[in-house]
Amino acid sequence: MLWLDKYERRARLAPGLLALVPIAFTVVGVGLRDLPVVSTLIGVLVSVGGPIVIAAVVRDRGLECQEALFGEWNGPPSTHLLRVREAVSTDPDRDRRRQLLSEVTGIALPDLRDEQKSPADADQRYAAAVQELRTRTRDSGDFPLVFAENMNFGFLRNARGVRSLGLAIAVLCAAGSVAAAWYALAQNDAPFSAGDTLVSGSLALAWAIGWFRWPTKTRVRSAGERYARELFATLPVLRTPNSSS
Image (cartoon, rainbow, N blue to C red):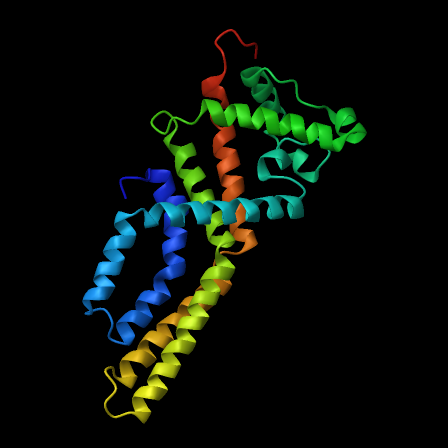
């Protein structure tokens, strides 16, 4: 795990490992955990960088998921908190947020006329200002709450990204365990018990239900909004001393 930093372990590696958990259920259920080849294989995968590969795959799937979600939502949560033309613009903190963001980043934000004239260009300017703010708040020691919310959003986004993979693995492991249980009942000399495989199959099935119900779009969006608000909460701290009120 020394190859990965705290963010990578929480936001990228953890969702990948959660997707692989049903395999462990099946391995234990069919009595393979005591085989030397299994422990050797696990050791080799860890030593040659298996966690790095898992984190990289999860990152890619998470970014693809994020792009799709932002398209569905017509922009990221941070942009919705800055737009003038939306219903969310009734937020009493919006104008102050926009003023501080412009002062801190040096980027002039679009007004209502700009948004109506060219929404895409306006959103690009919002994205540039937010990216500049993210750059200034990357230090987890100075901005621990931003870092924590960023990790939480990354974790849920990436979990959503590997949701179909995790669901498929869980279903396959549940089906395999049922097949193993049927074999154990049919063969008196089976090296594993039907009871153990049925337990592992039940756990895998429960895991599949969890993947189906847990990393929802609503949870990802809520996490994104919390991260955006925490990011904007740093603006008074970052504001230059000579900025006007």
